[in-house]
Image (tube, rainbow, N blue to C red; front, side, top):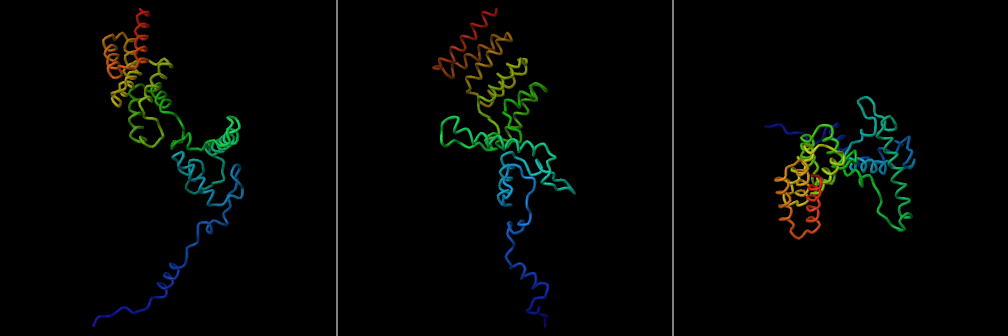
Length: 254
């Protein structure tokens, strides 16, 4: 005859069951005795739940974690510390956004205006830099190949997330910025060609490419791009005038 298990629980099992059935303490209960310290912008009596919500908004807006601003290292967890520059910067930005939100309506004569938030500028980036700024800096320091590689990597990582503008005009504006900084055409051309790879119907890119090639003395290459631009937008009078002015300026330069 097989032994049957007794129809009762061992004391430790019964205790575990009772504890499991008891309601778990809420997050507010767990932290009711944990009062935040060193608050200089947020209200001193802010609840833990509200404070946690603010911190989560920061994390999402900047694409970071708590240790971006707070000292959180093995053996040292000090949320109150002002050691990190990012935390001091965050306070400054909070003051700035509050000032904008408090005064913008009065300045433009509206009762209701859109509120500025961290995400308004950061859009998931810890440094709210434009794509143009990022690529221009890279091209200046490391050359065109590095800038093209960086663009592809950023596009793979952030496309559709709002962090950067990957539209048709982004690389056009980047090329213009590089020219304003007097970077060599050899640095500018690869980015314009990359833009045509992504936006083959971009008449503006063809015009820009034609102009740069013309400055390099490549008359045939420039003409081909101008003709393609006119084919893509035959009714665009502004584009036609732009091509004429470029050609006229080139004749005057010679």
